[in-house]
Amino acid sequence: DTAVSQTPKYLVTQMGNDKSIKCEQNLGHDTMYWYKQDSKKFLKIMFSYNNKELIINETVPNRFSPKSPDKAHLNLHINSLELGDSAVYFCASSQERGRGVEKLFFGSGTQLSVL
Amino acid sequence: AQTVTQSQPEMSVQEAETVTLSCTYDTSESNYYLFWYKQPPSRQMILVIRQEAYKQQNATENRFSVNFQKAAKSFSLKISDSQLGDTAMYFCAFMKKGGKLIFGQGTELSVKP
View: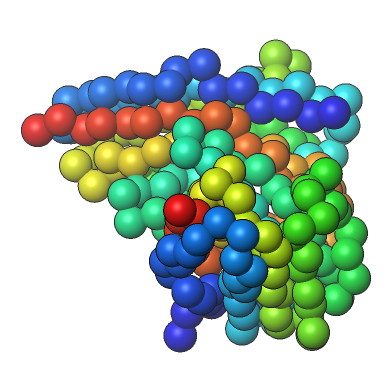
C-alpha cells in the first residue's frame, strides 16, 4: 500500500479555473505538508499541518487554501488558477519522535499545467 | 533564517567511479537534522541518507556516505561504485527540531556507462 498517495498525478486546466489536489497518508503521522517544485526543480514548502492545525503558511497567495479534515488527509484547493501556478505539487508527512523527525515521506507529486 | 546551498547544478561520473556532491548550510540552531534526497526521472522523492547534528559519526547507507563538518556547516554526499540507477537530481535538506524541511537547489547527477 502506498504510504502517501495524492491524486491526481496530472492536472491540465485553463487559467481562471478552480481545482483541488487530494492527499492521504496511512502512516499514522501527525504532520502533513504541501511543497511546490517549480520549473527549475526548486522545492519550497507551502503549508504544514499538525493534527489538523495549520502551523506553517509560507506567504502563499490566498488563492491557495489547504484543508485538513483529519490528520490523515490534507487537500489543496486552488482558486482562479494562473499560469505561474504551473508546477509539481508534493504532499508529504512526518512524525516527530524523541530525536526529531526521522524523515519526510513524499507522495508521487501532482503535475499541474495551467494553459 | 536557515539556508541550504548546493553549488554544483550538474555533475557527471563514470559508472563504477566515486562522486562527491557538495552542500553547505547556514543556521544558528544546535539541534537539527540533515538529509540527502534523490529524485529520479520518475519524480518520486527518495531519502538517501540522514544525519543528526549531535552525532559526530558520519552516516553511511551502503554505497552512500556523508562527510559532516558541523563547524564548517558542510554536508557532502559521497556515492561509491556509481550505478546507472543513481542518475537523478539530488537535494540536500535541513530541518531543525519541530521545523520545516528546507531544500537546496539540487544537483543533477548523470552516471555514464
